[in-house]
Amino acid sequence: MDNQHYKTGLYVIYDKVAQQSGPVMELVNDEVAKRITKKMLKEAKLEKDEVILYLIGRYNNETVQLFRNNNMEIDLGDME
Image (tube, rainbow, N blue to C red; front, top):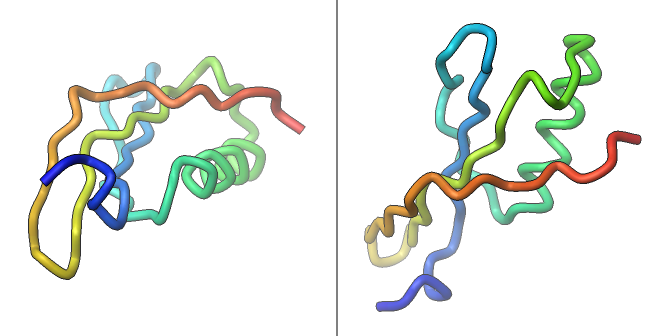
C-alpha cells in the first residue's frame, strides 16, 4: 500500500531549546498541523525558529497500518 492511502499524519513539534519533541499528534493533513503549530507558538510567545514541525509517519485507521516517514520537516511558512 502506498503513502496516499494513509488517512492521517503523525506529527511532532521538536523544541530546539529543550532538545526534545512534544507528544505525537494525529492530524488530517500538513495544513492542519501547521495551523496548530502556529497557534501554539503564538500562545507560548515563541519564535518559529525555536521549533521544527516533523511529519514522522502516516496512519490508516481503517486498515490499522502505519507508514513511517524519515522525519520529514514541514515548512511553517510565514507567521501571521
